[in-house]
Length: 264
Ligand code: SF4
Image (cartoon, rainbow, N blue to C red; front, side, top):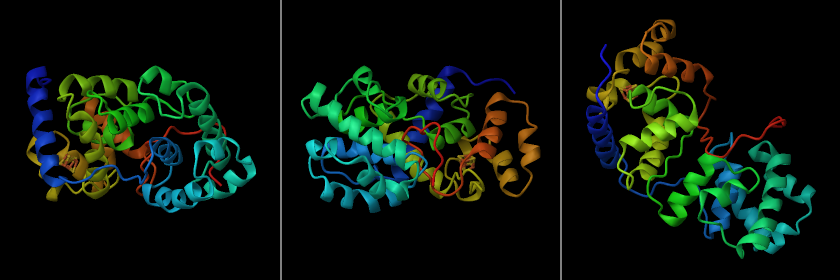
């Protein structure tokens, strides 16, 4: 099959944005927070964890440690106990404490508004940084290449890679910069409800007329994953690979995944 032109892909992306805006017109970020640093912490906790669970944990965390100073001075063991249900608790607790210290020391107690400064914080990668820049500061062109974004944009033929940086770059070239951050939030909602990793609901999907993966994704849902994986286009091969690699449940996986620790 001939690869669509850049113009055609831009038009497809614009239509995806339009249809998902209609489906999800309301508030988009699934994480609860009042202060900027609380969003940073909530996103950190969301790595390999659901937003719902993070939202159960953060009220108690922020009540016990109501300021950045108190978080910076917290006993690590106490933080670990509180964030334990979010998994990877040792890395997460350590990163939260160190981030609080660095925000106070380098940024006057605020979350910085540049990619470079954000990436210097522990546990912050491009996904987290893009989300913070988009949600806290309204930067345009932010693309949060999380698991839902990578899977759905691949199935839609907008991207042809599993690599988060490539997906971020490819989507940025196609989507209106003022819409890209919200689109990624909508991908999360859409990925949980319709375009699921396992079992996409193509029959109920308003994006189906635009979607080159509608049949193969539906086939995979019906237990013919091998057939989907056997298709020759890069995007579809990638989509099948993504599906098999995807964590189960409704994990958001926006936060960066800690290395060298098991979720206990
Ligand atoms: S048609 Fe199927 S694969 Fe395509 S976006 Fe909709 S649910 Fe996902």
